[in-house]
Length: 196
Ligand code: GTP
Ligand code: MG
Image (cartoon, rainbow, N blue to C red; front, side, top):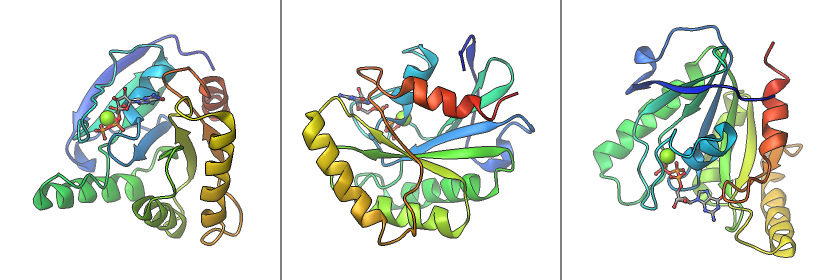
């Protein structure tokens, strides 16, 4: 899969505002600051496409990007940011739950997990919820540049051990770094398998 064009289309505050389309769609979700927007930019080779911030809670809406005029990438707000007000948290959760469970043209939800941390409770709960709702998802481990290869392997093995307490088999997964362009071809090839 080669990305020739990537254009911002629209920001939506709820599912009903999202573009009505049958084109295949791939969305990125995960804890605030895990690297969703950075990953979209890496895939599209455009470091100004999705807004990135060192402080969590940057992406607050459902952002649609049109790729090659025939499929979509979607940047979603992060979940689980402690400093967000309670009201805003509930708002974000509503947006996320509605979008993930009801978006008909969603082909795969990429759930981003920080490769440096132990599996966080909120990630485990979210992944379990995806499983229960039968939402097609893959795990994307982010920030793989920050640890040595050995530490990375050990940490992911620990996460997988925990995942096997919830899932009968390991979900599909990718290892990525937006900083070092790791995992780009694998992700694009995976997506390409669904695009005509
Ligand atoms: P919200 O929109 O706030 O939910 O965050 P997000 O998940 O979109 O994260 P974002 O892409 O804005 O990145 C958050 C921070 O992590 C920024 O400071 C990025 O530069 C950094 N970051 C993202 N990906 C990587 C990566 O692969 N490696 C390293 N070292 N830093 C990264
Ligand atoms: Mg973001």
